[in-house]
Image (tube, rainbow, N blue to C red):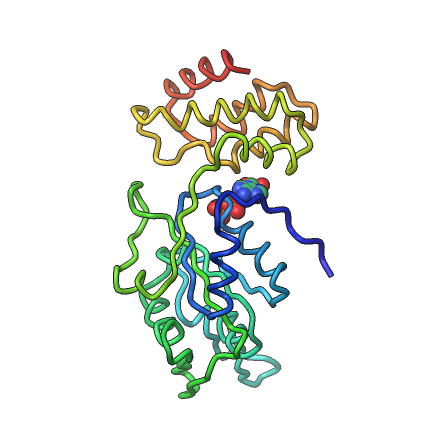
Amino acid sequence: MNKTPYYQAVGKEIEVFEKSYENRLPFLLKGPTGTGKSRFIEYMAHKLNTKFFTVACHEETSATDLIGRYIIKGGETQWLDGPLTRAVKEGGIIYLDEIAEARPDVIVAIHPLTDHRRELYIDKLGETIKAHENFMLVASFNPGYQKGFKELKPSTKQRFIALSFKYPEKETEIKILINETGVDKEIAKKLVNVGEKIRNLTEMGLTETASTRLLVDAAKLIHSGLPKRLSVEVAIIEPLTDDLEIIEALKDLANLMI
Ligand code: ADP
């Protein structure tokens, strides 16, 4: 069996998820990118010893991609189950990452799976299948306070247990950087301080801010021997903005701290 993924708890999320899993309640992970949502769900699937299916949703993702389609193989048409159908049949956790990005028919398709019916309608086969007793639907969603992200209807959200993921407390984030990359505590502390500083610069109008993921990336580069300031520049600052003035301002700021 694969190694359990490393996950540092930041609140009561493990307990909340375990109880939700016991009841097979659909679960929504809310929060900006890079806050550990995917890592958390991989960890939980491992801890609960369930099968794990994952779909990264984007604007072209349709119900067909999830449910299945006919393919031509050796001159014959063959039905191929999509990941949602497989999870419904085999049992396990399916993680629909960034569900709000997908086409509206995806939301329609999951509705009967998120209430007492726990069933999936496969329109191309004219079949309705009952979900396996171990089936659980999990989705993630980046709330719409940022430009360019789609909303999720309240009537859809209310079908889920929902938990917000935020940037971790300082000490927790330092622990994550050390465990994840092997970097020493001093460096981890400095990177977390840089992250915190950038997160507080709301006036820069950044659509996304310095996530734990970016700090982890910078720590990895530093641990591999790349100079600290250069690591911060390419792993944290450049991915955040293309505005040259802001890049210079953030570099000046980070250089003072690193
Ligand atoms: P999201 O799914 O929210 O976009 P990820 O789960 O991909 O974010 O997290 C990005 C990276 O940040 C992970 O690969 C991991 O290195 C790190 N990370 C963030 N939060 C945690 C955490 N609580 N425990 C362990 N690693 C974390």
